[in-house]
Length: 255
Image (cartoon, rainbow, N blue to C red):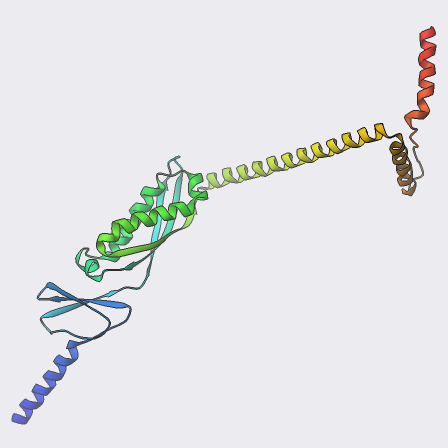
């Protein structure tokens, strides 16, 4: 009988020791409550608790990627959108994360949803599409400020997808096409302007230098001779026709 009692006592002692030993990993912190009252925060390693007296709550301090569900947004210029985002955060103070809020994961997700609707409702569609980095920074600052009392640090917020209505997509496509046509017309007009300017300069040079006009005439004749054509139109320089024009004018004056 004493042997049985000793064996039972050793078994009970081993069981108590087994449930008293806790292994805290490097990426965890352990919040310990004694008789329901906050006692301490245990660091990584082998830790002991008093069974029935102390309770241990593990908290991960790794970065958490929180997927914000798609939200219906109405922008400041009354455009209805569907937007989703992702929030990256981590627990900096395990004690606050357990004591100050019931479920910090759920609370952070709800706060991210309401903040996303609030911030995007104050911007216009063009601003949302062109200045997304600024909006992400603004969201990060708002969430970080509001979650700071919970011991949580929001490191980054990214808007993942903006779902536009079909009519808005078609309108933006037409706008982009009109913008491309406008640029093409501007480039074409600029080319015509530069070409006319160069032609005007060339005409002025030829007017001052008759030899240049003759060389241009001969070059044109050479280019025409290289063409595979049975009919060649030979242009006469104005110098050849000018005497005949003067004689005709003199005859008209005599009449």
